[in-house]
Image (cartoon, rainbow, N blue to C red; front, top):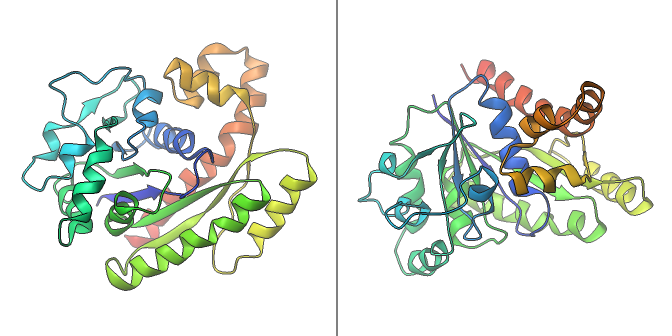
Length: 264
């Protein structure tokens, strides 16, 4: 059974892409995994080491054509994570989808053809447009990364409203996996944001991921954060960084794996 997880927040700069890559990398050690870059900026594609989209390479733009075989779009990465890449051309698809009746069901229909994967992760764009709506319509679960800043914590409730609309209109099985606080630090603003997030009823709050230059370094290298730490640091550094930066993501992976048992 394939589990589809959308990673979504309408605000940019909340570590959505780095979280997608980190979780996919960890779960790919045990499960078959596909990551879909649904952001025209293509940061997830770049972060997995795909630096250039070749002229004959199909992308997420093509995925959103129901006539296209999605298997023909998939790239294999050296990390054991398969990828459907994206580039700026995907921005045009959002315009096209608006003019297409029931277009938010296309992605769901396409992903039904990829049953060989145990997990599919969708890195959504920083908006609540048709691409994000399509991902939520296709998903079983949605993870919401939220930066530990006051307005970020306050604004994510707009996404919760969109999720409720999706649950009512197009995907009643969609569940919120939880909120992932990101870029936390030892400031009163960060602490206040965590308090605000903890007060939202009915939504699980995962352990926060601290702010760290290591995420930027790993993205520049095109290497998932867990592999980057393992390959570029001493034993003591690896232990310290793994505890701080990787363990919050490992707990999300553990939750996903535990849900497999619940849904079996």
